Image (cartoon, rainbow, N blue to C red):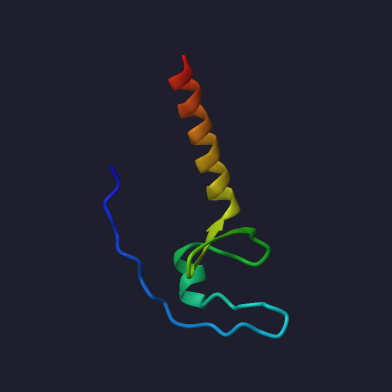
Length: 72
């Protein structure tokens, strides 16, 4: 089981006129986010989260495999 890591604050960003934000360089480096990468945007209550689309697809594939095994 993965170790629980509390959320970390990396700074603040400003939303531009067109709704764009700049992801801080430290975050891009840590999470290996580069220009052209697709991010999935989630929201609940007052929280907005970004997840790399590739990782989200891997998660969905793993869940589909688990469901298939469970159905057997």
